Image (cartoon, rainbow, N blue to C red; front, side):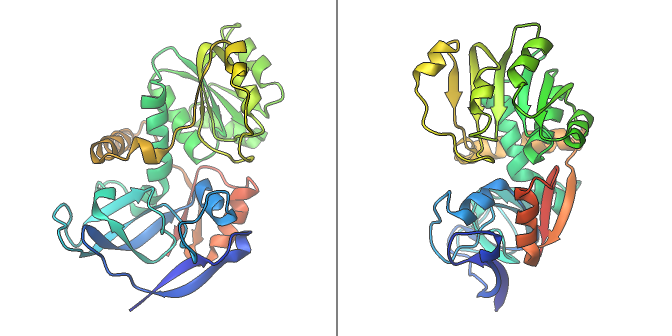
Amino acid sequence: MMTKAIRIHAPGGPEVMKWEDVPTPEPGPGEVLLKQAAVGLNYIDVYFRTGLYKAPTMPLIIGQEGAGTVTALGAGVTSLAVGDRVAYAGAIGGYATQRVIAADRLVKLPDAISFETGASMMLQGMTAQYLVRRTYKVKQGDTIVVHAAAGGVGMIMCQWAKHLGATVIGVVSTEAKAELARAHGAAHTVIGHATLAAEVKRITGGAMVPVVYDSVGKDTFTASLDCLAPLGLMASFGNASGPVPPIEIGILGAKGSLYLTRPTLVTYTAKRADLEATAADLFDVVQKGAVKIAVNQTFKLSDAAAAHIALESRKTTGSTVLLP
């Protein structure tokens, strides 16, 4: 039996992704075989493709998010049954029509949530969850800064923070994206980061903000620090413009005894109980309608290169799914 998959044999541009036949994997102990209905596209896929994040092996099947149906169980799996609708985030190997995955990394997808929505929101939605609920607990009355506010994680964070009673300042790259961010809960938008600190100062009447969520990285790091109130928290969770260069730790003291964290979804969902709680919180706000998942682009899985080009050139908004 064969499966179709996008594989890369060496790091590089979108052209290194090849649509190939691979043997259908057999689930080992504690694993299941999943027939994938939809695969999520995320910036971490680009990091693995380019070599910014080191591949565990070559050739490599990238992709860390998807949803589908369990078709076979490995030895010892009792938490799932054949036919269960499930979703996951964080397990590499997603760009395939079928894949094996550890059963304890899967969560059951509520019937009210489609495969496409599930595949497009697990990584981004659970990232948003830990950022606004755990890294910094956003509360009623807070004003916060969210970078890439019209992106997949950004649009979820804007809605979720507004639902929690916060005022969101969304940072975007174009006026069209500013409109999108405002439509998804941003009370204020700033285009570009050149005047960001000054705009935050104006909006907050000089108080600045307790937290900045920055997925852009190198280009926005200093501007983000300058938005923080004393004792504020900088959550740097992505590198869309490249990795943040080494910093002199004294700058955190000079700018107001600031906190800096580089969180990852892997750590926040490493324990099964944390994964279940994170997913349950996400499913809850989506089913209530407090957070709407915008699947704004779909591509065939075989056209993954085109999807990467669109993502890297900032042509995408919201979430993108690849359909096997």
